[in-house]
Image (cartoon, rainbow, N blue to C red; front, side, top):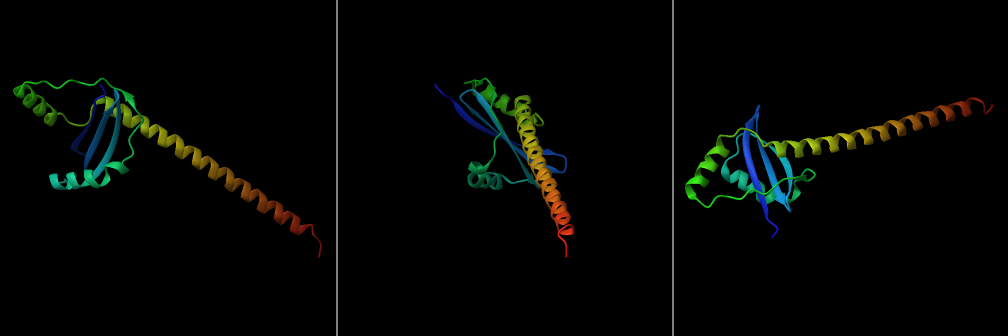
Length: 138
């Protein structure tokens, strides 16, 4: 049976509040990081999720085993307390975010290279045109 789940962790990092969406589907983990700015209230977070969830750009999938939740209510309460005390995001999430960052970096490098080559070609054409103008004769 295919299990799916989404988890949102909101924490303070530097001057801003950050939210990390972790989505598990078919044993693969994808992550998206959102900067909220000022400390968001519960209602603001819920509204953000409702309005913007489908617009979020998640990272490429990383292999992640699905953890079973304990049936014992006291154990669940202890696990929730541990998650609240944990600062930041998990290592699998960090790997997924790093992979997304590297892909975006490669994309930006490709675009800047294309722009640079197009600019170089345009400058060359302008020089050739100027050269032809000089030799045209009056």
